[in-house]
Image (cartoon, rainbow, N blue to C red; front, side):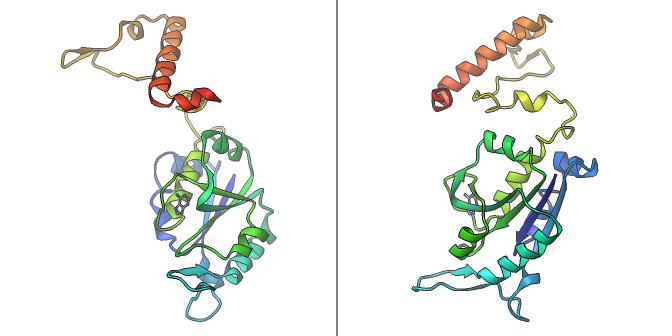
Length: 225
Ligand code: ADE
């Protein structure tokens, strides 16, 4: 999979995408991430990519021309399955969306800054708008990093233990059950006996019950679907 990201602050994306699982996904050649500085398509020699908003009001708006030129140029080299704008008024990111996007070949993410991007880009180019939660970030970069991570780890072959993504929280609308490691007794608190029993069928049942219980307590809304 290839993900292209358009941003005015590429530095914000570098570290989150250079470590751990996403680093490994790129090293294995399963994921390519290309970060593009929008200023490359600035309207003038001062690197301008934003302007005052019509109608007045505080905050600048990202101009349509640099974004359109960037998208047009990148689209010549590949056709994008989705052009995704990260924005707090988009659809809230869910595991289901991450699953769907992990099956695509080419994605383009647009990171908004300032007051946002000119509405005409949203209408004429963007195919999907995603929010990572009901709060406002300073820009779309951290949201884009979250989205790359959520999608990248689902690409077949990225995780060493192929089954581990399947048992993540949300994968079947359930939160994940509790997990334990050594020692079996720590500060007077014991690992549940069942996990030491070696009986895999019973362990699976126990995990399912714990996941269900946790979901009922913490996120009953997930069980309504
Ligand atoms: N940009 C600013 N806030 C955001 C959010 N919550 N999700 C996605 N992009 C954003």
